[in-house]
Amino acid sequence: MTVTLSTVAAYLDDLLQVSTVPDFPHALNGVQVSHRGPITAIATAVDACLATATQAAAAGANLLMVHHGLFWSGLQPQTGRHYERMRFLVEHDVAVYSAHLPLDAHGTFGNSRLLANRLGLHVAGGFATYQGVFCGVHGTTDMPTELLVRAADTFATEHGGRARASRFSQEHRTRRWAICSGSGADASFLAEAESMNIDTLVVGEGPHWSAVEAPERGLVIIYAGHYATETLGIESLGRHVAATFNLRHEFIAAPTGL
Image 1 (cartoon, rainbow, N blue to C red):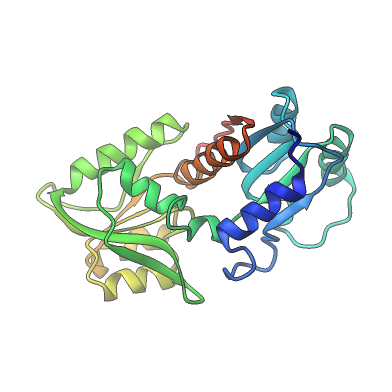
Image 2 (cartoon, rainbow, N blue to C red):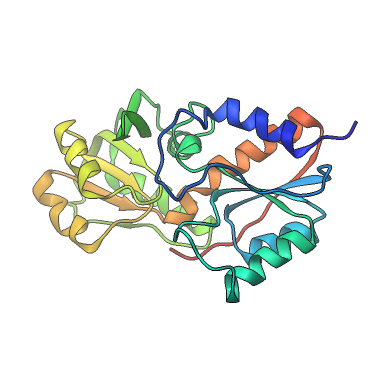
């Protein structure tokens, strides 16, 4: 049975509630590039770029599902590298479907939720509120923070990076934690963590000042890598869609080290 892009896109739009989950204006969630089809196989990657499109085509996939889409910089003339990327997608009949915050916020495929599972943490509720939607998760435990840093570093290393942590004592214990993948250490999320009495915050990345302010806010911030922390959701979603529609799936690793 042939599977069309419109069928898979409609399924994803409904599963991820793309029409109702708020996002940044340039996220453009949903189908960003169409194709002639039908779908032969699915590839997933964190980022849409020429490298991941090339690897998708080499793997025989003509649907590339990503977390970070093509248009983060807004309107761009289709010249230079923008043209080369789009030309490759069209010439090789590779469609692109992007899901940013609808993926982060999902109760099954959310990056932060899956990272919590990977780190052995039990999720109690949401964290990192964006326009009324939780992008991250929080919970309780009782463990040496050093062990959590090591677990995060093991995970980050598997995806071409390393985990780092803001200053903390060897005696520090993690009792109230939160996770927000990607750029999770912005000012609003740090304020939210402080108001919730979070003592350990796991993020992908954050600005220098966040590590400076962390001790003053009663926080240890573990920076596990933007790329690494956002691999889990899109890969898991790809496996799910492939199984649902009896398609082959391949995750494309393209680590940035950040």
